[in-house]
Amino acid sequence: MKFSTREDMDLPIEVVFEGISNFKSFERKALRRGAEVNRTDPEAGQGLGTVWELSFQFRGKKRETIAEVSRFDVPEHLAVTYKSGGMIGAVNVSLVSLSKQKTRMMVALELAPTNLSSRLLVQSLKLAKGSLTKRFKGAVNDFATTLERDRGQPKMRPGKVAAS
Image (cartoon, rainbow, N blue to C red; front, side, top):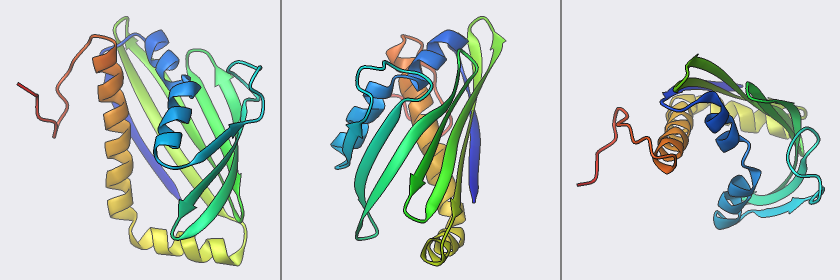
């Protein structure tokens, strides 16, 4: 199963890559949402080979996941692969510089079952693919909007209301 979307941002490619590779902010976000995050290479900095052990509740069960940075090509590409019980997958983020101050971010999330129970889970997710795709696109849009706002480049995005 695959989800993908793209966002154009009014930021240089280096700034966007810095945002997508800010692992500490993603770790804090996961902790705020109730996940347990254990980075197994705390002294390694950020880059290829960075590994996390994650534990979280999903559909009433505790899930354990190992995630690893499998590609780290500054400033164009970042990929994280993960393994969780009977599921494997990857998150791929590609950046394309459209101009000095504009970057296109393409995000793809793939998941594949490796056993029968995870196949049943993926089947149930396929039934809700429309709403899951909408949530995925919304999350990527929120990330892009926040990154632009934090870098001093506010931009109205479709469906967003400006605060006055």
